[in-house]
Amino acid sequence: MSDLTVDSTARAQAAAVRSGEISAAELLELHLDRIDERNPELNAIVSLDVERARAWAAVADQAQASGEELGALHGLPFAVKDTHALKGWRTTYGSPIHAESVADHDDLLVERIRGAGAVFVGKTNVPEFAAGSHTFNAVFGVTRNPVDPSRSAGGSSGGAACALASAMVPLADGSDMGGSLRNPASFCGVVGMRPSLGRVPEWPLYNQWETLSVGGPMARNVGDLALLLSVIAGPDPRAPQALGDPGRSFAPPLRPAPLAGLRVAATVDLGGSLVVDHAVADVVRASEARLSDAGAVVTDAVPDLSLADDTFRTLRAWHFQAKLGALLAEHPTSFKPSLETNIRAGESLTGADVARAYTQRTALSETMRLFFGDHDVLLLPTSQVPPFPVEQEFPETINGQEMPDYLAWMRSAWAITVTGCPAISVPAGTTPDGLPVGVQLVARHGADRRLLEVAAAVEELFS
Image (cartoon, rainbow, N blue to C red; front, side, top):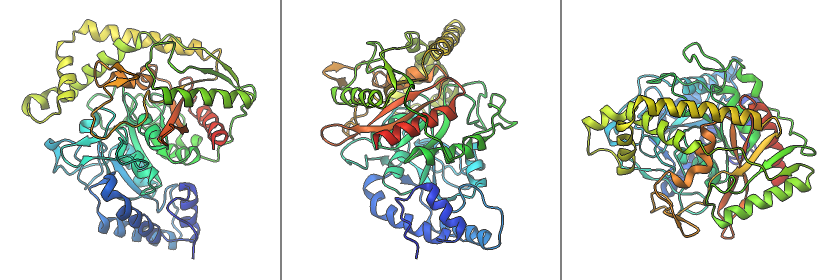
């Protein structure tokens, strides 16, 4: 009898299925038991299809028994983010407009996960059209934080982060525009990575040249995250901006980067441009001290990201209007107010506005290129706040200072988005009342493997 549990690493679970220590069917039942135990309260996994999952697990076991070549995720239970199409499954985007929609194709990211042998069990909950960093919608309701169910799990990959942290699944996919892989990772105490632009190609897209949002991996530890990245990364002829490195170049095992001599630029408030909750700031400062004690060269240095605000807000509004404007016109009462406001903000944009934003984004990329000539990584808060009450749509104040809208409290994440650099959230501590806090590590564009190695070393130090 295997001593494997749902809390075992994804790598251990995959190895156990591959060796025959446990069958895919047995592993699935362990996870279904955990889903039965936690999901009714947390609402992380939606569109659960137990019988279809069992049928796929049986197919996986047949392949293992017949000696077929097995993929990297063979036999692992998997729930796909509900903004990613999974062929034959209900895919709602968290919108009542698509409440009964069934996907007729796999998104490229899902196609790769299927090809690697995963056993699909359902979808993970999202905010409406993945807008906002709190997971709730009119179709399935709210996803709660697994550490404290009275708190938010973050978003838009909140269902994914919650399902991971509560061990309903061993790995999860997500996407990130303004922090949707990173914020929920911080809130739920797991690891979430926004890869370099082009690292994880997406298809189909309404616009292959829109690069604000990227797909990426989530896991309970950095090594497992590298496993999933190795599956979903790599070029594809349908994605013209994909980077050329093969996915296998990110596969574990990872060799943690030596911390002695590592050049860490660290900041709590990004040069005074962030309002950061005091409890989060304390965790970031403690992280800086621990890295310094481990031999890293920690300096108080920040890149000039003052252009990020106008750049992100302009391109986000332009993207939402281009993608959802016609749907809003057709269904004017079917969008949550904050999303409708952002779509309508795009209606008044001119070509000059969009051109200015792309010019600024080019300048931000150059700023980071030069910055990483002097530093190996940048460390800053993942989220400016700890998990907030689940009844709120977003934090209206931080340290008593009013937030002007539902984007302002996420600047620590989306200021990095517009640089195109890879960024990863790693658990770093908790608030005095036990809520998870992650720190964000950022590296130069293309240095995803190096970032994983640094993150593995930081994870080891903080554990």
